[in-house]
Image (cartoon, rainbow, N blue to C red; front, side, top):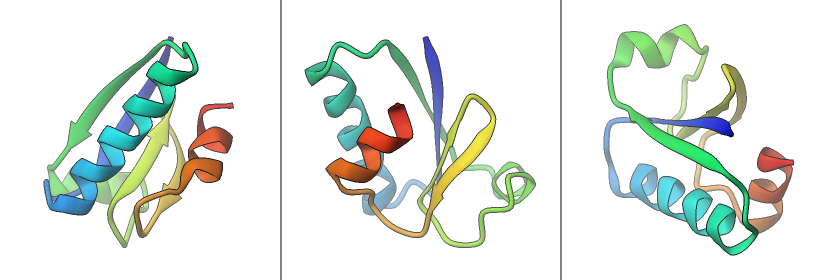
Length: 77
C-alpha cells in the first residue's frame, strides 16, 4: 500500500487533488491511503512552496496545481 499525502490549506484545489488521486487509484485497483496535511510547518518540511503538493511514501512528487490523469498515473506508478 502506498501512502499518499496531499499537502495544502484545505482549499478547493487540495480537495480536488485528493479526490482525483483516490478516484484514479480506485479505478485502477491501486491500494493507497490518502492523508491530507494542512499544517504549514509540515508542508514546508517537504519543501513545497506552492500547493497542492503530493508526497508518496515520503517523497515529494508534485507541487503547484491539480495533477492531470497522466501526472497521477506517474505519481502512483
